[in-house]
Length: 299
Image 1 (cartoon, rainbow, N blue to C red):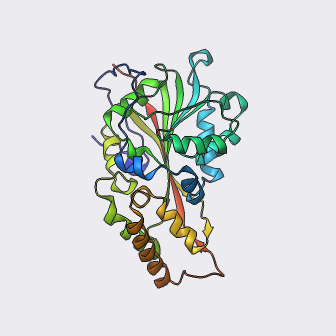
Image 2: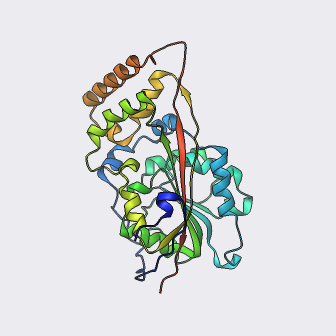
Image 3: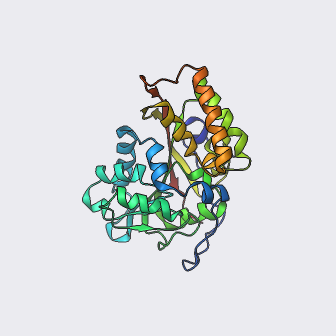
């Protein structure tokens, strides 16, 4: 039975059908998609061309992290574990919003070390970081109040990862997913997306909806909130817009010759829509989609 919250934002009750096995922390999982391994290497480039998150959605997430009604203080190791934290786009803003007590109990994890190094430079006050993937999180069982995944759950929407997230969360702990997405109703955004689609193949992506289908079938979590919010809309030089698209994994992983062909095709699209200008910047329309799920207790 599908979780209705992922369709309409309504609540759903699910029955847990199995227990979770313990994780072996001594083995680093290699369950990272090949496109992510090759496309997410240059953390500084990614950081330069990706949008930030709005104050509105950051405040929503921070309020969930700091809600202290659902656990006993001594039972926690972390208020929040962030998975796939990347270069710290969300991390930095959340840390600025959280009280010191929660900042000291915030663990940022990322499977790509190059990205994590950029995150550390962006978040110098963050004391807890780990290189790990979502299916092998080095945290004891039921010691985390909130797990956050920004712009990344579609990469690890699988049984091993969802079991691991369920394992580390306290009873009634929250798993929060958030994405910044470009508005495909805008004609030039659609045309640029059509170029990218040729390269995706089996590479996980938000718009495939496969992550949502998987999550709807998971008895470990029930959805308690779904919001579609206004996003951050940067104003970029047209070459920076192309730089943004080239930071997307399926383009970043191409060889140089093919990447140049893609860039030229993107310039053609932007010229067709009258966006090539040295005088005027291009507004890139984003919206933010937020899902909040709650851990369902195992039998």
